[in-house]
Length: 177
Image (cartoon, rainbow, N blue to C red; front, top):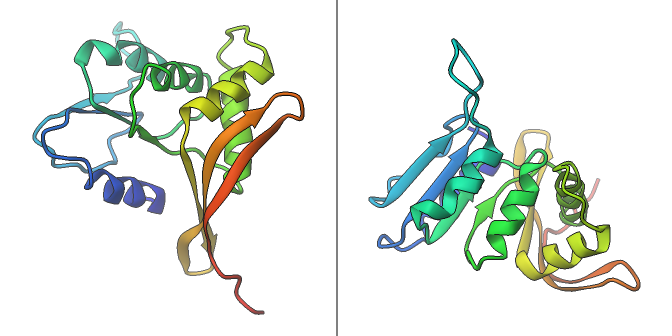
């Protein structure tokens, strides 16, 4: 299990037991023991059975009345569908994305939204991200360990300058060489 999955598991433990959690993954990796858990897993087409993508599962998510949505990893166009869900008021949604820093994660998320094939202006995507995401946490890998290196709070987006308004919540001390 990857550290990012371990962090997602740890954060999910703070979700109250009475809340309905919808967990969406490509491959079942996240281990949650909530009583009110609905688990969706994507699948590839095989033996005449059609594929079910993360995008399909996100589109079906609201029918299951979740209080919280957890997405194992955002890799592509499903970012658009996740952004749409976030804009419907699903506070406390958690997901992971591969990136080199917290700021780069915002850029990568926007790029993934653009992969959806839905024609949306870039600045509208950025504004929607700023309105929908609250915190970005970056995990860093160094030889022999992984750790939280940065956490940023998103406080808005200025479309005129194309800049997110961010506040550092946490920055790990840099190690001396």
